[in-house]
Image (cartoon, rainbow, N blue to C red; front, side, top):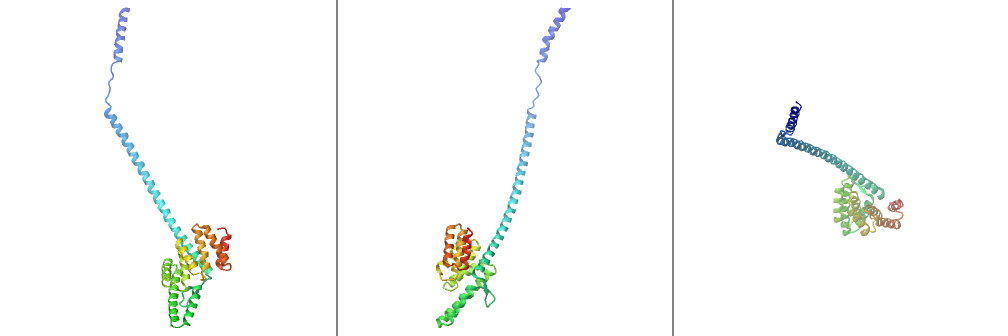
Length: 261
């Protein structure tokens, strides 16, 4: 009996490993794996598109913000330019001693009015030639007043055109120096510094006997300082103080130099 049990167990021992070691059934998951891969790919692709759309939306918002900032800066620049123009005109009135009203109610540069009056008187005392000069002086005065009226009405572009025409048509007039001076003022107010410097320099170099020379020297000194030409500015203002120490422009030049600007 013992031998028969041993034989049975032995046979079972031989049979058991065969059942355990039998090849397992393997299911083909290739199709399912591809499906999962495609799903993962779709999710990744969808997420990438969403991220890109979010980035584009953020960039659009940033562009809109920057455009708003640009509009704000343009407005501020316009206001600063207007304030700068007003300051230059106020300064000119203080330097030239104010303005006087003409017979037609227009406001005319006081120094210019005096110069024209003198020219007209001299012309009236002369013969036929003198009468012609008087007519020319009257035309120059009218053109000058019209140009200056544009300054008073803050039509700076129109004033520049009018004064440029004046120096061409009346280059030998007693008002030519004043016209060049105002061109310097107007170009300076519009931040066209090269044109401004040229106009002021014309007053100094070509109309050395004009009463506008000290003012032109002072303004040219300021323009050179704005151009970054500090040494030229200082030299010119020091020369102004030496040559015209009692003038208003000379006093202002002293203040400017002493301020260390």
